[in-house]
Length: 150
Image (cartoon, rainbow, N blue to C red; front, top):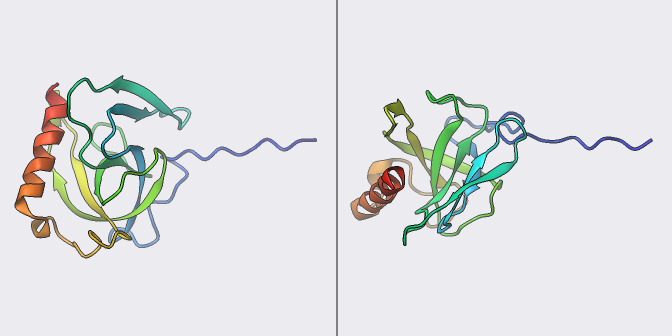
């Protein structure tokens, strides 16, 4: 008799992390520089293609969610991960939360947790959003806002 393979749901079955809230896990949905907007299918745990971005811009950071959390929009908490490289969708990263980008999406709270990849030598030393160069933060905010209004 063949065993049925177990399926891991990235939202419900992956730990938030052993050292939360200092270091947490983040599941990536959309790689940095990508123009495809993926979205987690809550039922299956698979990624669906939500849309293809038609702008000349792409995602400014790896974009994902924090497992085993709920935001006010009944989705997992969103996270933007600052790091040098893009990573594949559904990769699990060890990240350090350093701040939050307060957002509203159609009148509903949809904040983004700003994180740095804990193992990236260029970003791992950041522990607070105020340490990120201002021009990088402005660029990040402008690109995220652009996606919400286009």
